[in-house]
Length: 335
Length: 174
Image 1 (cartoon, chains in turn cyan, green):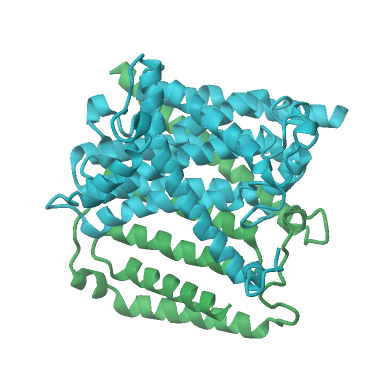
Image 2 (cartoon, one colour):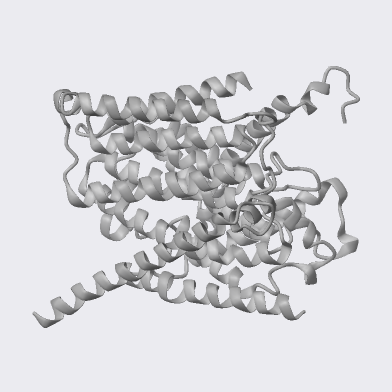
């Protein structure tokens, strides 16, 4: 690195950060585009259908067609809408989903910003997402939107608590809040991954992650069959595309964070499978598997009611995570 | 460094003015989150990323959302007129602000700032935690304050449960 004449400045601070951030945002947008196809293909596979198969071979050019369609569509906003809030909401939803990627280590030394408070940064950034949902619901000034936004905010704030609690065990075991340190701690094969001592925490994290990214069975803010789209009912064209992109990006980011913290990140499952610089493939494989589980759940389970949702969060996940926190602390004292 | 400082200052000041001058309560709350984000940026510049992350988590992610919740549940968001924003209690407000400003200037001038440059703060979280709990070189009063805050939060939690439970019983007895 750096031998190429004229490219040394790439390693210097403002440039390295700017270029890698732009790369990450490019990656996130592409992930979102690919996931739109993956979502439909997986749903078709689960329901024994073909799915999109007209654009390109086996339909793999469908995302490009979708993007062109959404770019050229008219951007309608309701007459009584709060225009600025209405237009700013998709951005306020997308930026947090993209910004979390900055602290995820893609491989050895491949991280945009190795924050020593990476975990806290992750909580902090995901908590902004609720603000975007409220802005979208309020800005549309429609009853369905407002209902969806209130549900979404309540759900996201409630599940923030088990989400944070479920990661405290990881922080206690590794003694660090930095994502890079947490991945280093899990080196040396799949039996060293944190998922084994923290299995209940992993389940709790996954469930609250599902709720945090508003997917079935926790998609009450959207509620297609009752409030027909909820907070995003009034959006169309590019703004709607941005909301969808942020939903898919946050699903991908939840999977990436779960595989980084619990499944060893870029660490290969067996020591001899070490790919060197290409270890990011392992993170990609793990993330893809978790994304598939997200989609599998979406096309299998029905939606919860609001009271069931709150019960699950406060009466099951929070006590379980607190209990396992004590178990972890006790085990660390004894061992 | 200077560019970032100018950007953050502008963002914080513009959002703060937006909070005061905006004509809708919801807009004020949203501008407030912008001001909070700007302040988090200052914390990052002072090399205290932990503080910045907690600022975003608590103030942007929780406080603003709860305020918006309160506004939406209790009142119809409506447009206020500029006269009602500016005219009421202009002199008491001016004196209070001037007093706070003078007090801050007095403190900031009196403090010695040797060795305190941007990028020279307590970078490591462990140091921050130890000095918060009075376990390291920090002042011991901090641990007492920490405990007092946690008791306060417990009281708030129990009170919230008590209030919501009492309502349930009243409805059942009706």
